[in-house]
Length: 59
Image (cartoon, rainbow, N blue to C red):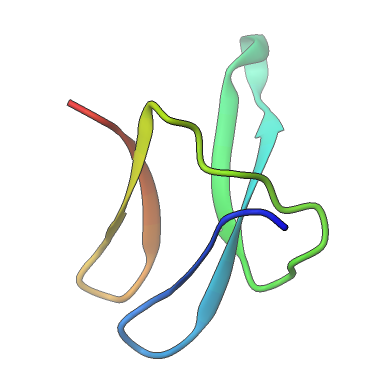
């Protein structure tokens, strides 16, 4: 089971990733739990003002 988090509106989202242009790893949240991944140690999750979850590098 991968990483999941509930936002302030009560919706549960699951973390996914894919490879972008140039081999960069892109992270995104989806309501679909299939294929979800664990949160990397170097990343943290923040919530925007609209309730959208985003992955950010730890500082």
